[in-house]
Length: 637
Image 1 (cartoon, rainbow, N blue to C red):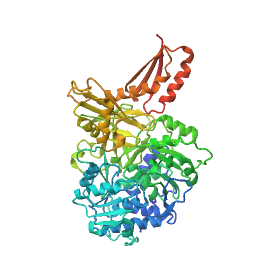
Image 2: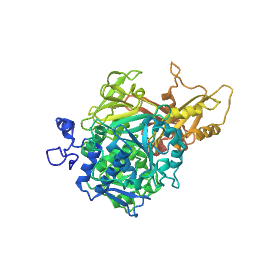
Image 3: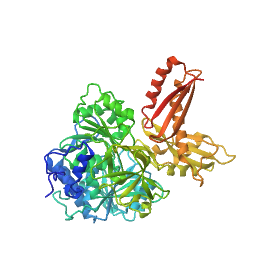
Image 4: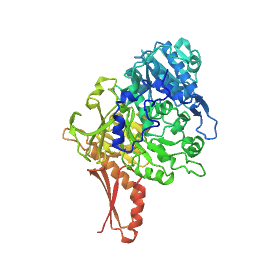
């Protein structure tokens, strides 16, 4: 019989209050293995359902409309559907080493497929917006045995992509289609019709899932070569649900506005599994989630109706919500705003504090740590710009590494280095052994690829990225894939794509190109060439700059830090140019900084004393939304 509570191994009534390092140390004095009640995601979901079986687990809003009556699935009904899905996959010989992949928007069936697959085998949620050749590479790498997809419905090209690639997947045995017809001659089956053939009372496989069993593969990183698939165990994923119950007000019966995709760990685990396993309810904001404009337009009325305690999302969602007037909506249920996926601008945090009178708890982690690994604790002082402390039983270090990623030693307090993490949520390696080279600074300690520092009180500050990944609104963009498209054009000698700071998206991709000698091409023509050949629209550079000589390292590699600083300088100049008085001049320098990582210095020369105060205020207003800090100085001629 499953445990009635995911956290029921705490002997004292209620949850521990974590005010300090001493409180966390006292908690950790009991080994983690003696704390955790659920050994698998299936058992964790059973524990969540046992709180109040008749309470809503999923409330699906097809149009993200606060006035719409949701499709309600109770916890008891949800567990039955997950079990039916597991039994359905089991009939197709899906076992602990077999993979069920899915290409789906946010539908109730998407959750059944995800957790049902984990109950009998390995779940592999994949971004359905990827191009067909990318999908093929991921499904081949995963050795997908069963595929669950959206059928031929208006506004979606998922079905067309599946029909293009299915013949290239030799391991594929069956396709289950949602909102589509069966064609058994082609091994295509209607998901909902098939589901009803199976019992939802117990797993027909009789499987006893071990914490070390693989639960899922999540695609991360590059889009060229062998796809990088993160391998999660059940222990990795359950830890996320367990730890967030300690550090966030995830209360049984409480709703959360849900709009993150399930192919992202933030959606599948931080909000999905964590909420459901602790007896909460997911208000699913249409199949498109937060990408549906109505979700933002209706956000505060949705808050009023569903009364979430936590309002969470990627920074772009937090920022966009502020553009919607609260009006007469009652948003008093919100006690905490929370975000991650990329850095949250300090200005956004301040606005939430001033407007909603709630703290913004920034979280930090990666797919390789099963999502959140570090966060600002609600019961500890929040340091704006910091991502807080490691979750209980997790660890974070700042280390020095060599060019091959080998550990050289730990950094001093406030010294910038590479962020390394260890703990129950940290994965054991990628599916392909080739990707594990340099993935760990030492056994158990994953190399995040990010730069940061730990201050005197143990707060983690992210100061930059050692890797080239561009994060646009929480969406990872691999610059190499775009650069390769540039190199396909005969006029291009060298090309580099880097992230330019952006107040809304965090970063936007911009390109730098060195043309071949004697060759000329219009920037619009070259960008159009790239746009036609880049599968993801979000990855298309928003600006192209031709440069005479590409900055190179001593061994001939493109030196991207110089380009990132140039991109930031250009952006700041563009943002401020209309503020500069006649006769004055503007100088912008973006440079490395020992505390902040990078700092924008804005210097104005020739400004009369009288307008200086107002001008400085305007500059701060325009630059405050950026994650990168800045200072303003005035010089006389």
